[in-house]
View: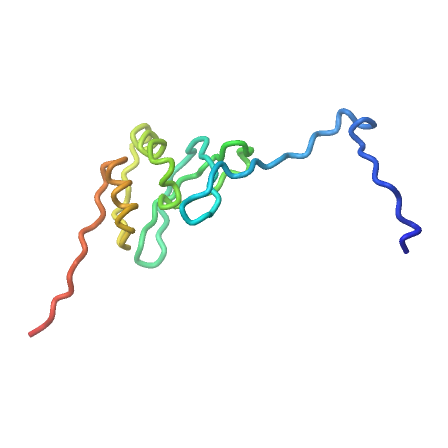
Length: 130
């Protein structure tokens, strides 16, 4: 019943030592498709994940404006805007990118090749048996 509702009073003045709720920053920009993009603060770790017959390189990403507890594992394909950080991380930690068996988009392969010196596997043309 609406008659039992009470008016909301902010408790900041009554409880000044109470921790302030964590706020989340808005994305820094929108990509070409209108999807939001967040900024990478730093890379924390690297791993290679094998799913079936394909391997994917992933990086543990600390996002700018977010606590370290919200760091996420991201595939290298999601880090095209932070390729300089990927290159520095790989050089500092001796990371060798795996030979990804799946075909990357040509634009992404060009970005990775320019930033970290990795080349996508050459496309194999099917052969016909005579």
